Length: 373
Image (cartoon, rainbow, N blue to C red; front, side, top):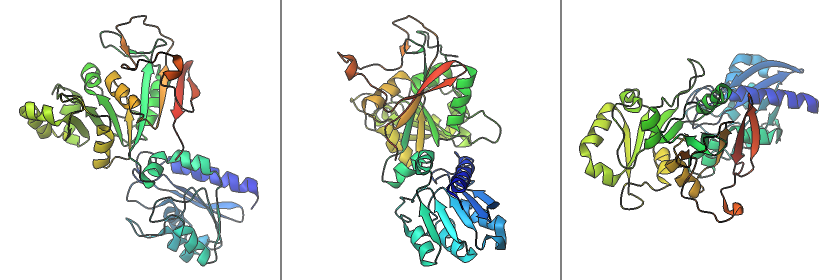
């Protein structure tokens, strides 16, 4: 197989892996392609948490024709029994001749053991083709595999003068339709979407993915240190679906036990934390701690100013995308993207790390990422 062929088939495996976005969390997205005599004989990808792994799906389609084939896979085949049997053993039994993997799996139960199993069986193993793309694909999984907290992603839409909303709280729509479609695409990739209580009360957001009827739906999180959230919001009235989660302070829960009870009875899952200031302000780490306890590997934070400011000040965001619309409010009392920062010089401002730009029908966005795990 030529280098160009290897690249073509690995790119196809990466395309397949993307199809599992949002559905496989906290597992990684993985795609696999089986090739024989230069032709694809079977493809597979991890479709859902607990379902067949990509390699097993491809092997099932290939049947006996997998013997002597080359496998292109975006992540090292697993070598342990979890919700499914080890893929490395299945590949050995199927008699594949060669495994080309994009990257080693850093998860402690795998971490090179899958490659070792294949090599012991006489299967040629190559690793590293399109590794960066494969890593970019699975940042939440890779952070978790290396002992990290849930992956926090900032999404915000602002005017050119940095406002999230007018002084009235009105913010629909700062971004255009193309940018909003991008937001829904992002929502479908994350385990949960979070907003502060002020944003929830002002916008009554659905916090769902509206790409299509089959899109992955993230959980909804509201950060409400004072238990001020109106019970009439969709976040509460739709909580019977089991996807509404709320963070509050122990002080607020003790002060408003009836409100706490009503939220729980409506189906909202509530987590309590010690306040950061003796009053009703939650510490910045509360969101990550709660998300981890709830089993979420990733959270997209969509506002408002207080929540974004708290997390940014704590350097808690792993990555994000900020959409800047060609609109100027020119009002000092409009809602800013962030508040509480008082740098005396520009260099002390919060500078987006490794920023890149994207364009959505004339509206620019700034994508940033602290590091690639």
